[in-house]
Image 1: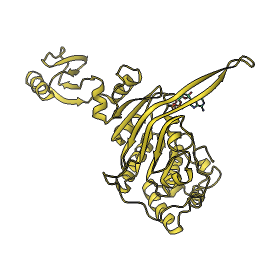
Image 2 (image 1 turned 135 degrees about the horizontal axis):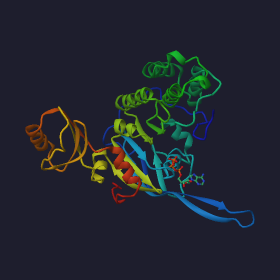
Image 3 (image 1 turned 120 degrees about the vertical axis):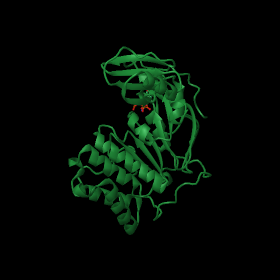
Image 4 (image 1 turned 180 degrees about the vertical axis):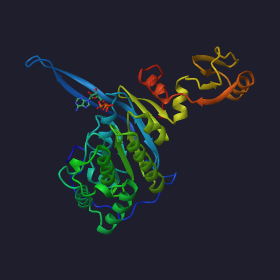
Length: 346
Ligand SMILES: Nc1ncnc2c1ncn2[C@@H]1O[C@H](COP(=O)(O)OP(=O)(O)OP(=O)(O)O)[C@@H](O)[C@H]1O
């Protein structure tokens, strides 16, 4: 079904994918002071008032070729509005954006050669056609040469295990199968940039894992840059070199996962399994925060090696696990606004 993200004009495409990105390359995305307002009419007829909602405000960032960047934020934060500006669906109200050397809203056809877009909640495939026919139509839309199409389709079919359902109408595919089809359609013209809006939404753990591993492979082997919005922090942990967090339209964080963890003082936790239940362990440099039978949880304020040495010297230990700060806790603290909004690179 055509969606607002679907490309409706035929475009030409190079026959072979470009080489992996070099570190000195130009940014593939460059947003400077990007903003988007919506004017809403509210209230009863004849007494309508106009209100302006700033969905995106003064957002500045660059993405380099070959990066995998997560674009996170709570509901209504401005993620989709940003994605729509990057893909040319919306025109910015303020600032500027360049994507793959184009002005997205003015050069949609040129941009379409360079990017692939997947919206997890919608499909760009033809609902009533078998997946194979849908992908053939995509080939014509992008004017991919037949031999290059056959080669890429074979490669993507192998990687995403599409063979068993290539001849099934799209409407009969499971969500996970459809998503694999959508990813194939988005990549058949070998774009340099893949923009993904919630690509794992509603999928089971196996399908999520298949898609994550596939995306990593595409990034590593083809150098495809990936920008992904997701509410699934498993996607972030497995895929993203870098995350940006947007909140109330503004960029609240831009950095890598260790930097993100460091924004919230969440201690590391040592989980100790004793051979038998015992009173709460007392060691310097750690606080026992929970005891359940033989298992105890110690929040570390000190070097784990020193605490582990002391615990094992004084207790009969069956097993030990060191848990890094939970990324989910860090992100929800950011969403709640308990972290100062000055953690951006821009
Ligand atoms: N077409 C529109 N008209 C009016 N307001 C809009 C429009 N699109 C978005 N908004 C408003 O802009 C703000 C940001 O919305 P946006 O869809 O970009 O958020 P989001 O981060 O993608 O949210 P979600 O995670 O729920 O998809 C919200 O307040 C939303 O109501």
